[in-house]
Picture (tube, rainbow, N blue to C red):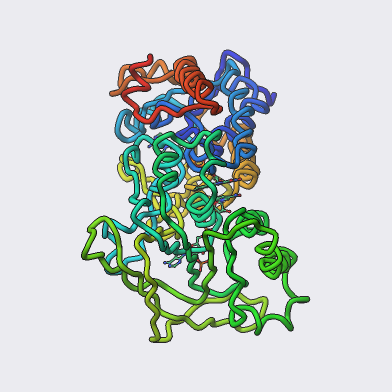
Length: 466
Ligand code: FAD
Ligand code: NAP
């Protein structure tokens, strides 16, 4: 018989309430009769980067939260917020009380450039900046000194870098009715940032951004999009028919930048794409310690066997210095191991920043899979992939869990689940009902000022509401 009896519940603990955690839960609850899913989240509020990453002017992307809410309302699901696994509850307690544990805790750290000046005040990571304007409690009050900065360098040319550039350059009144924090709105209102230069270490064809996102910036009212320097594109022109559809579309969008500029009423800000340059040093500003004076980059050559082969860059020993009061590193997020993994012999690949796995099954030191341990989302794949990809992959992980269940490649003993860990939690757990109370306050405060919600910026205040 394949289906589990409702009395023989199969208990799954999921660590993290971002898209990976919710989509894995959704598929399990939908397809595995008798499953009980408990989701542990470090913050008192759910949704991970769907709340704290996705840009405030992209509200349609946050619609995935409607599906997550539907999952949360299922009687087979429990949300346990404000419980950071490894700090407020030990990983070994999950092992003892659940049949399976899924790591879906994302990537909450920054990659580093490892160059001089990286720790200066005027250098921010995109993660800090994005977390700040999206209300991540950790970055509340960060308030970057935008009122004193005119020239900005963004390192890395992925979609996160484009989010950073767009938020810095757009007409701030456009953000007023979004869920951007009031704190960030005020700082952006007084910003003097005029020029943003986005620096990629490889060539145009290796741009990490996607067509829709670059088109949005090319069309941004009031922002002059500097036509691409011919040196970045001329050598590729003859090969365009051989390129992928996506990069052809990017080139078309960039080719139209001049026309788009001509359609705009005024051009008081500027965005420029630079390629084949790696930052090598950030210089402090002697007059204002909160700012930089400049960013030094080294010019690179591209190494590529043919137009469709992978490309890498090598440095040339030639340099340029850009005046820049601020720099934003947008070179990717990074995952770290959770406290307690080592003791349970769960290896973490620190070089790639992922938990090693096969189809979502965690792989041990001896290269064999560890029954009952799974991984989904960015901590499985590394910090890339849009929500749709995270969803598809998380469904696959749920399929793996079900396969193991039906093949008896897991423990099926009756486990205590939440009842077994509740007394061991060293914080004040936040239930889904609690979150709805917090959300109600956020919505009420937002509606009174014409926003969908006004995010609460401190975990203490969230807990006080309860
Ligand atoms: P996350 O969303 O990061 O969720 C992980 C969760 O785990 C977090 O809630 C975290 O608090 C929690 N957690 C961490 N450690 C612990 C612990 N020890 N115990 C308990 N909980 C823990 N995709 C799109 O499709 N469209 C977009 O517009 C878009 N914009 C983006 C903008 C930014 C700035 C970024 C960074 C990404 C964006 N993405 C976008 C990609 C999308 O956000 C990811 O695909 C997705 O969020 C990855 O999901 P995840 O669940 O793996 O990680
Ligand atoms: P990303 O797409 O991987 O881009 C990272 C960028 O950093 C690349 O240009 C990379 O260059 C560069 N980089 C990495 N290490 C570097 C170094 N040491 N020095 C210089 N440059 C370096 O990552 P992301 O922008 O953080 O985005 C993460 C994911 O979220 C992506 O899948 C993205 O599409 C998604 N996202 C989507 C949206 C949207 O749909 N609107 C918005 C935001 C994010 P190389 O290519 O040379 O390594």
